[in-house]
Length: 588
Image 1 (cartoon, rainbow, N blue to C red):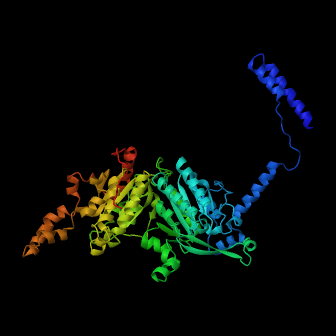
Image 2: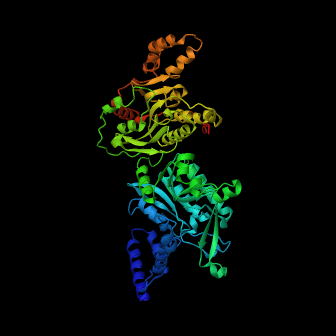
Image 3: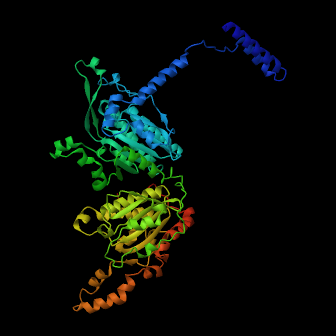
């Protein structure tokens, strides 16, 4: 059979070159060579081929990779109320859109018997897919495989998708569920973390980076994992203790946003056992680094969700507000909310008594499309409100002082919260809408000694360096240095409005009178006349600032939505040249 096929193909090739040799002379020589060295075409016998055997083996390995650390550990994961790495990816991405990289990667460690214990995939699933049709790259750590601990190959998989995300301009979402570095690999695992940190830094401001903590993301913990294969290598032992050490927490800290799952996720540099040994302090994992600790007290996490399913759905919603990269605009979404809609309730939302509070979120909901506002860090530094919304279908960021909490005063935590948010929005071309009602910076020794000057300067710096469209509305108070800081005209604010209730001054009328008349013996009458004739003019309305060009207009509150959307259209092509410098040196 083979001889017949060879002869048939030999004749076909020779006759072909004979026909074309009179047209292309060079074909004669090629024909002679071909005649001497004919092409041998391979025919396969019926049944399994080598290629089929390889593919069958690969499919078997792929099936094992999908099981991670095995069915028993998957069951344990589910009992904890947690999904597996692949289940999380399936819920995060559009159905059928996930394309996996490096499915068959295994660790290369040969110490401590690790060469006999390899799990396909090495504890992390990486690849890309889509959320609402938009491309993202994702990695999901698998706690069922070596506790999700990071090895050299584990890190390489993560670094690969981060490089590809920057290359094509797409966000990176990390689903963290890891005990930290794998101590059996020694310095290789530490090098792996350093490689990831470097990628985080290089990607910062280029593509959005989102971390979702869905399990431990810890400094040092101990975990007992059973390995039946070790019984032959180490008779009498049916389990091995893996030690995971620090590093895991710093990658999420370098990303743009960090979210957590309540009761199942933890972030800490050193675990409760180390804290006990060093400080003799008894503390639980939840108290030390749970969702409440980081969303309320430390500000490390930007929000927390009840369970894995809610978290992944909310991340899908969140990603829809963001651009794919710093080269792209945020997506435009259709809305039935009219651009010209006026809300007359805004004309009466500010209390007549300037000492009474109101909820700035009520103002925000009446301004944005379909009352859809994705608030960031809602439980931390509540005296300032930040988040994403849409106006006229376009993504905008909102920064607003919150009179309900400490009268909306700026302090250390609110300054840090606001500044990092403003810088993210500036990096990714998201317009900033600032709603001002601030009586100043919080006084006191605690604030001064903890660095309110340095931390307050962060917010000032963030607004001053921002080149995206900046629209500001003074709702009521804008006192002292806080007036300057909150995106004033003097910090290159593009459009600055005030409502008729706006008050712009060095301080409130009462404080000003007490200082001006502090040396007058009978101050009562003088203060009354001053307040009636001067303060009500200079302090209780925005006219003086408008006369000096510090405000572009004083508008009716009900027209605010229409005005903002019109201004966003005008500022769409804003371009601001910058002075060359290697990088800035903001007050960190």
